[in-house]
Length: 303
Image (tube, rainbow, N blue to C red; front, top):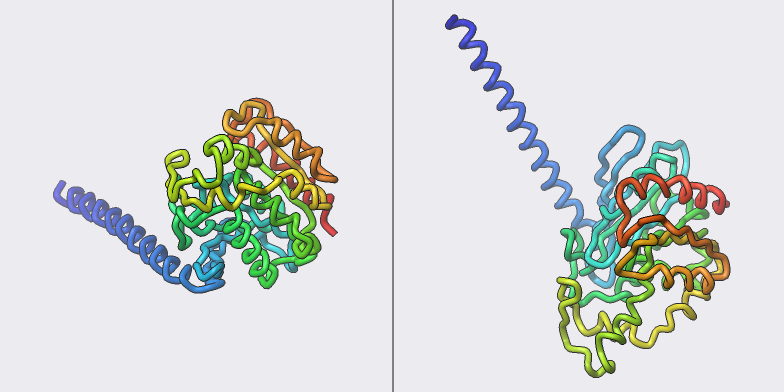
C-alpha cells in the first residue's frame, strides 16, 4: 500500500513539474518574442502543421509596428495577402479566414495599426488619439514596402485585404498610382465607407470637432475626423483599376449594405457578394464559407 501511495505522489509531482515546466517555456517564448518584436523584421517563427507563423515587425512614421505572417510550406515564393484590421481590432481579426487562406498555399501578413487597436490588445506603438484613416494608410504603405523584401513573397502577386475601417484604408491606399502597379487585387470585408458621412452627422462643421472624442468606447483625436472630412470616398476609390471582391452582410447594423452596393458601382472592376445574415464582423462559420471564394479570387487574378 505504501509503495502505491509513493508511486501516486511521484506521478502527481511529475505531472505538476511538466505543467510548470510548460508554463516556464511558454513565458520564456513570450518574452523572447516580445523582445524580438522591438526589432524590425524579427523573423521569429513557429511551425504549425504545414503553415509557419512568423513575427515580422517594421517601422512606420517612427513607430514600431508588430505583424504576423502565416507562411505555407513551399519550395519557392508564393502569393501573399496583406490584411488590415478594423477600428479597435488587431492582427488576429478574422483569424479563421486568414488561416484558411494560408492553408490553401497563400501567405497572409496581418499587423496592428499604430494606435489602431482598442477593443483588442495591440503590440504596436502609437496612441488611439493619434490614429486616423490616413495614418493607417501610411502604415499599410510601409507594410507593403517591407513585405516585398521578404524571402517567401512573390512580389508579382501581392493582394490587399481589409475589414471594416481597414477596408477603407485598403481602398484608399490601393487607389494611389504608385501602389496600383505593386498589387494584383483587393478584397474588402464589410468595408466602413460610411465613416465619412458619420463624421459629418456627428459634427456640424470641422471647427466643431473636439480635440478628443469617445467613439464607440475608444478615445480618438481630432485628426480622426479632420483627416477624412473632405474626402469624397467613392470618387477616390474609383481610381483603383484592378479587380475587387467585396463581401458584406445583409444584417450589418453598423455599416448599411448600401455603402458596398455603391462601392461596387464606383470601382471599375468590382463584384459584391451579399452574405446572408452576416453582421459587422463575420462569424467563424461565415469566414469558413467565404474562404473558397476569396482563394479563388486570388488564384484567378494572380500572374
